[in-house]
Image (cartoon, rainbow, N blue to C red; front, side, top):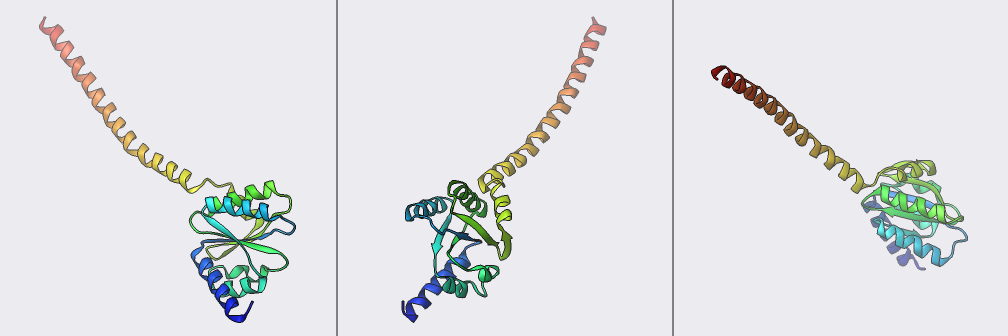
Length: 175
């Protein structure tokens, strides 16, 4: 690989990393191409991607960027998983793959520039996903007007019962 190819690769890595809100360093030593392909497919479905690049090129590409916290962690065989939309979905996909494969391990991560350990990535994976959180928010927002309407309906119902009782008393008194 000549110098211009290396610089083009560094720029591509840098551009992808800057678009990503979540970057995870992983160990993949001893894994087959088929296993890595399965990982890439699951990450793509979760809104992420997985790259295996030379450590020095990745270190140069990430230096000074959002995920600068990862630059000193590149050694031996490592890959980089990038998450663009929902970091929780990417963390879940990676955590599921860790459970499936005995060779795949999470090293560390950077979420919006903040360093994370492997344990913190696992904790992130246990959080509800974006869709579930939006559903809970919508349910909560829907509960407020529903409760408000029910409250006023109960007040009006009580008033109507009182008026009905007064009407019955007057009709008995008149009879």
